[in-house]
Image 1 (cartoon, one colour):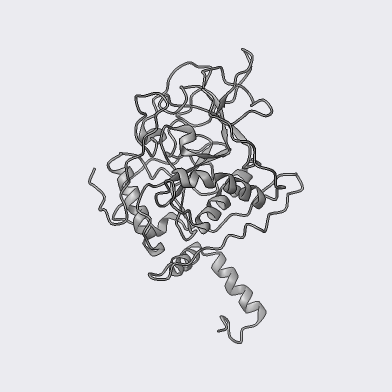
Image 2 (image 1 turned 30 degrees about the horizontal axis):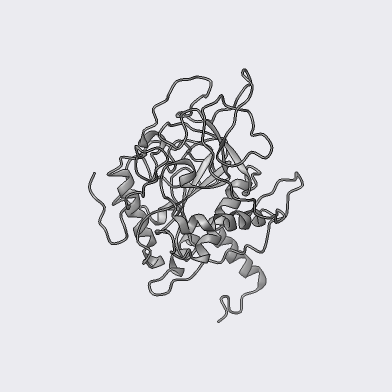
Length: 357
């Protein structure tokens, strides 16, 4: 069937331009694709890398993202403070929502509404914690308010919400659970795009400062974490599940390919080192392994993460970082046993009514 019967080339271009200029129409088209009983995967062409810019920066194209207005309506919307921003995003944390996997993609807006209600209600957060959510069909949804292009401070990884973005896979991906290809490809697409804006290679590590002692690292510790990290890299939790963690090397390489970077052999797996408190460095030494705390000579200037809840490593003063102010983690409180891991409690699933605050 011809979409534009008897229409000339100029007419077709004009109609397509009109659709591109009206985000609401584009969002509606995405929702139509996810009609009940007909789940369609969203194609993300990982084999088509973006060319490097003349400045030598590697940037990936922005993937299609469904705006939050599609899932957030007046029945659940809460009054919230203005978004907070950092200067850039240098790492992304991958999560799973620990909710049922047997959903149709047409149900996803309702699932996200329930997640939002649980986090802003029972947990008293100011907004949904994740910056992006990805369903099993590969559809990407805008999560936290503030603009997908900007470095919005999220509430997804306690202690490491600054200069990072949280990407949540809708479902539970413990050991043995298949991770849909469309979902993995879309996670790679979001990571490639967001990290490319700061010229960050998804396969490298990022230098982050722990802003909360309830993370894996003491307050003020500077640690090199993967640019595409698992939630458990920064917080004591099993999130995003063993199955999704096993896919992260592939996701990092796919994201790098989308940025137009040359492929490389995967690095050898190293045991997680023990973190130590130290003055904040200006940069990680070459070859610093992810998860390693690094130090510099005394008196060297540092650049702490920006934002009202940022902790200046040289200040020595702990800043309160409650769930509403900085975003508590999507997971359980840290266990009392050092290094112990504990599974996060399930968030409201697609068939579970959100509890009242």
